[in-house]
Amino acid sequence: MSWGTELWDQYTRLEKHTQSGIDAVDKYTHFVRERQKIETEYAAALKKLIKGYSPKKRDEETDFTTKTCFGKLLEEMTGIANQHELIADSLSQNVVKELQSYIRELKEERNKHFQDAKHEEKLLNASIKKLDQTKDAYRSAYNEYVKSKNQFHKVDQDVNQTKAQVEKCRRTMEGRNKAREDCKNEYILQLQQTNKDQRDYYSTKLPAVFQRIQEMDEKRINKLGEYFKKYAQSHKDVLPLIGKCLDTIEQAGGSVDATQDSNKVVERHKTGLTPPDDYEMMDLENELQSNQVGNNQTDNASITSSEGSVKANGGGTITGRAKTKRGGFGGIFKAKDDDGSSRKIKIPHTSSFRKKKRRSLGRRKEEVKPKDDFSHLPPSQQRRELQKKIDEIQAQIDQEMKAKDALTKMRDVYAKNTQLGDPNSTDKELSAIGKKLDNLRLELQKYQRHNAKFMGYSPYRNNSCQSSGFVDQADGKPNVSTPQGTPHGTPHGTPVPDRAHPSEASPMREGSNGTSTGSEEHEQSSPSRLQQDQSFDGDDDPDFDEDVQALYQAKAIYAFETADPNLLGLGEGEVIDVLEEDDGDGWTRVRRGNEEGYVPTSYLLKT
Image (cartoon, rainbow, N blue to C red; front, side, top):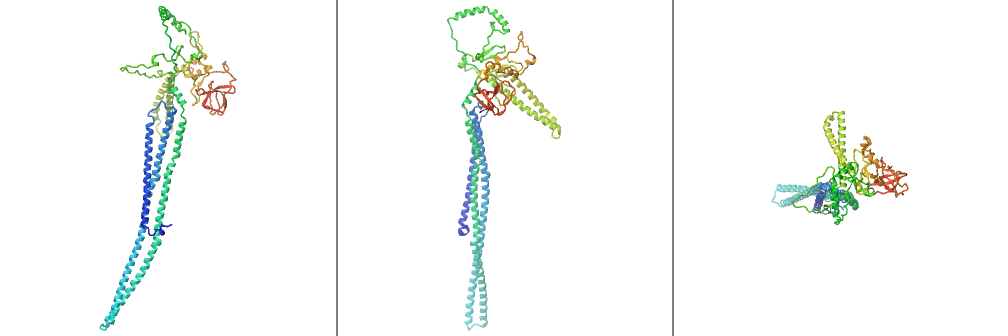
């Protein structure tokens, strides 16, 4: 249906309808602008919320699965906030701005069409006005002609009138008759023209204008539908990304492990100490006898002390009796002192361990000053802090080495092409990096010495006769040592079987005077020599069982190369027999043919 033919007489209604259409577009534009504002404010509020719940400083418990999951949630919520910002930006660029521009164009086009309609109407009204003028002229000329004609007949019938007067009236009548004819012809022509203009106006010109207005309004409707789609598309474009963020949060929630968090609490706070012994019974009946024996011992104190000092230099005790060596589980919670004697790691039997005493109001709590070797901490925490410090210093050294290599390459480039820069300009920075590297290496050596002393051996001497794993045993783990060549990502340390306990390792050869008879090169051997001394051989071990049954078979998903005799090198895809499963230290005992050894558990896939 065409507006030009069906609504030819509804010019005013069409004018109001098109104006309401423009108002509808403008109203939708305001709605999208407000929607965009909501998205922007929501994204800002969400980021503010995330910032408020993000840790201000590094939390010691960030490695817990719950904290990791919450951190992942905050990270993904930041991504969701960014997606809402994208929605707001898309609504602003693709909907609001385009609609504002289209509204201006729509108003201009509407005004133009209605101006054209008014112009055509003005032309028709002018033609009608001219028709009225010619009609009035024709009527006036006709009345004048009738009046002159009546006057002529009146004069012609009057016998008293002269011939000249009659002729004059006759000429006047003829002249007015001619004027009447001219006006009549002009009126007829104008009437024809006005009728033609009116037909053209109502059949061609006005319908054409109304048709253009109809096309404009239909275009407005279609355009508004497109912007409805763009509004929806602005949201649909980011919904997959928001869905991925939510999926990641869901996966992070599935990774929460209560057992793992509980074990980490043990790792972080375990001291490696043992509970105190039972309280001894106080025997009042034998107290008098004990006091008498004490008095007798006091009389011989000087003689006993002199004899004890001589015997102590020979490796005995103050009383001269040889110290017996306890094996098996009795020596698990013991460590070697500097003089070779054993000391038991145990919580002291004091009231402070049982219950804290109340301090007086005027007394301040004494603060324990931290030491460089972290000896103020319990053994397990001391070991962890030492290793953490060594790793931090090593990372700083690696970073400075990369900076030094970059400056060296830059200096070489400058040396080849002096137009790029002066080679001497890098000397100052290289010198500063060199000094920093020297300080870092000295600091690294210091903590390595602390760590070596804590682990029970010296980094400059072969201490294979000393126990280096008492802390691991106190933690319930087998003795471990870190082999050279262990690939990155494998568990820290090489497992040493129980049959290769350090207390059973072959001692250093000593001369008659108790000094080492080895060479200077033997004295300066590295810890790798210690690991070789702690290695085991199934053929020499009476407990070695060649017929041990395999639990199941596994496939190596990564290649594992090693020179350590305790480990077993594997090729990627190789199938081996599992003899002992991982007991929590990250290593699994396997067999390949006649070869046995340990491999990282994470390198294996059960078949």
